[in-house]
Image (cartoon, rainbow over all chains, first blue to last red; front, side, top):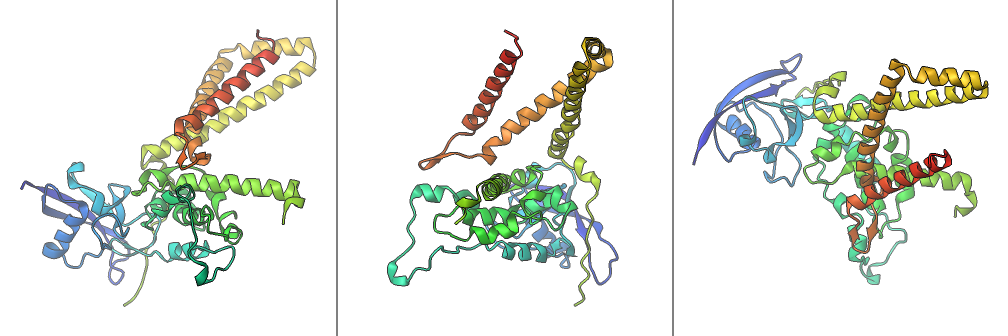
Length: 247
Length: 129
């Protein structure tokens, strides 16, 4: 098994002692097949137990280990050391306040996620004895790609709009709202529109497309946002030009 | 344990963080040239309404080196905007037929086809053929 020495430059911030974040350099003996998360674990186990970061599954499912790696939002568990040359700079996800070291404060995202009601709101209540909600494969296909979001927040770190206008609801939350709006079992679109069709919703998006480029699950949030824009525009025209169509 | 979250404010440096942001800004920047060309057309209409002499002087201005340079730049930016925009249309307008979405090429190809058809219609109306 081959190895290599990797230089990691990690942003550190300890709120008890630091006025501002600072970089700390670690020289780590790594195996060729390691990912950045392995190197961080190695640092924590053998060099510096005070280093803080989030992680859980180590297989790009949980979405916990999102961080900036050489300036790009990435999952640390999916970023192979062999793909980097020279010093690897590791920072917390951009646009989020830093709680400690690589751990960010995600309260803003969690609050926005709650606001868009990312769950099924059936149009009509259904008793248990009426059986399950049925869906065809074509109806599933309509929204399936948007179900793959794991809330890793890389899209927020890539989105310049969110960085400059933090009230923007943002790519992942709007994509999840769209996922339920597209679901044939759902009837909650009107309730979600109040949030996502507002100025702080899709209309803050200027279609940079960075969210889709960095998404590790290929959810394509930029697509979801543009589709919401078109549907919201059609809503507006129908409401203003053909108000009699409104139920 | 005391909490003291530290926010690193976003600065205009984000534009240079990755080539994708520069490509995006180039697309946004194209609006100055496309808007400028629109104003030039309005000015041309105004000169046309002022009579043959005014129209001829407008055409002479169009032949100046500065005007030709502007037109070349405006054409370049308009093409860049159109090509990058059409490339994005499959995201905004997915068409599902049965259990599958139509390939991206069909959606953006349809936009190119409509573009070509409209351009042809304008050329026919302008008496180019």
